[in-house]
Length: 46
Image (tube, rainbow, N blue to C red; front, top):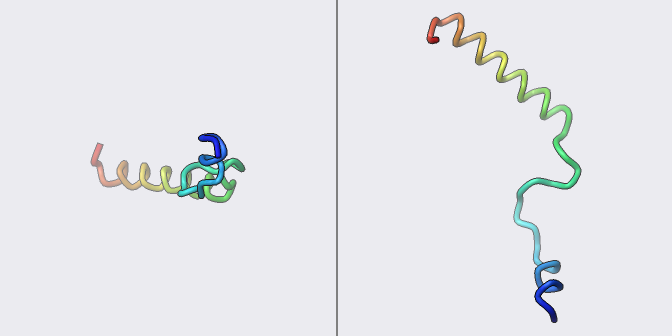
């Protein structure tokens, strides 16, 4: 067994997937950023 085939047979343990980010997850992430920015602005923490 070569080194290449040994690494290819190893199970994935997380990390980025090949299909890219889910659009819903992306939208929810940006919504959270906007809500946090609005909260910080309203509280005068900047």
